Length: 186
Image (cartoon, rainbow, N blue to C red; front, side, top):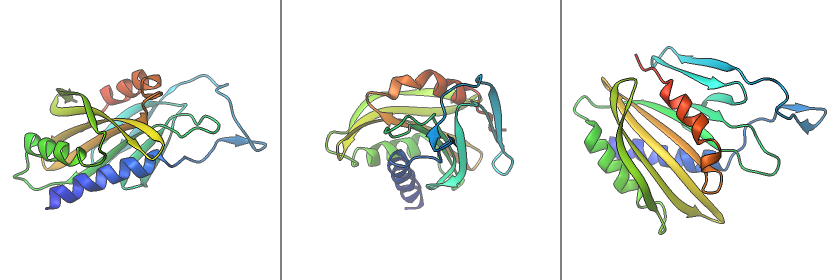
């Protein structure tokens, strides 16, 4: 029951955060353009021993929408912002990656009638086994595409979720992959 609650919390988090917008970077009431040179910044959460690199064009917030940290892409006027969220939770010592992944996938199938799994595979995050799933569905008038990665280290579950519209998913995928590849959970 506890793992079902964690999974449902994460799914709800993804849905809620996708529809939200981060604080604007505003100058004189107008959105700023990408005028400064992009640099790579580092993020660290010492409590969960989580480190990663992210581009300076993104902003982040901790402990929002049920996520440990949420990274937002640059906001485009009148468009919903895509995001990359990481939720970290303590789990029972008997929990394993395959069981959590299968339970999570079965629960995801319930979020929409048109839910479609587009890709799923085993990967590694910081040399730890992980499961990745990409899927799409409709919510209200939006066509959403998400990617979710689950990795366990000791008794800590790291759920990494990338959310965008189906039309814009690939626009930031290269950047998102670079962030994910930089993740360290030691």
